Length: 306
Image 1: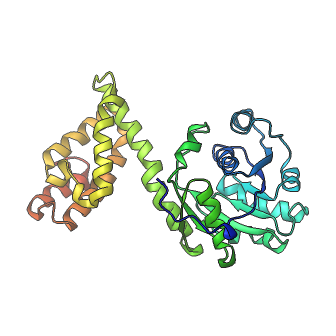
Image 2 (image 1 turned 90 degrees about the vertical axis):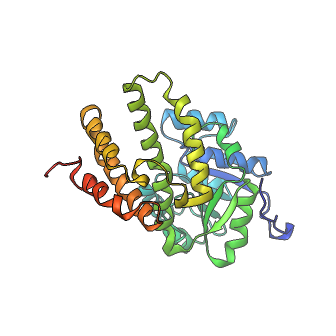
Image 3 (image 1 turned 180 degrees about the vertical axis):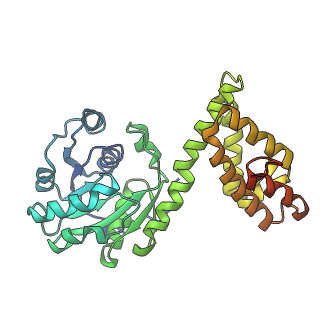
């Protein structure tokens, strides 16, 4: 449920025409959410067949146009391109005169704040950085997932109310992020979400190798409980052989991984070391058990002289 107080009507942006530059997984979903709030998507740009299909599914009837034409038709423009492409896109649009004074220009990059939009600001645009802290599928389910989703918001102070109002209209929860903190904010999200996918996929691969027919069914309840416990209790939720100091078990894990999944060894050791450090700091791992465990982690296997 969205518990953020709704802005006063006089602070809410007027109903706007909306354009999307970059029909990846994010842009069409945000535009579809804005349409539910009463705004009107009028133009979208997309290059690949997949992006065009997404636009057709989530924004039916909205015409495809080149980026400069999208800006010509829209009062609010969502720039939803990959992070590395954003500065060049903004500079190019500003240089060609596509940016209009008073136009709301919104990017959804987690890495950048509002300053990446400075070329457009100099052309008279109103810059907003609204990053949804959510993983997207490129389907209609994304629109539903935006309900209660946190957005990292960065904008000039005079545009703060407008930025927060747009987030709330999409069903999200605005979280103000200082310009200089954006890279750290984005690194934290990537560490938690992107790496989680890799860990889960590796775990499912290993379970299949171990003969488990339905690794997703086995992991679902376990990982759901672990995530819930971690969000509620932080480091106090740590369990397992590392937190217990079971050096022999960890050594056996490493040996099995070296045999069946050598590509997973480095990740296992790195996460085990990080877990051991946090368990020690919290008093969960007894110091007398930590020495053997850290020796295993340092050498990659118990008793390995390397």
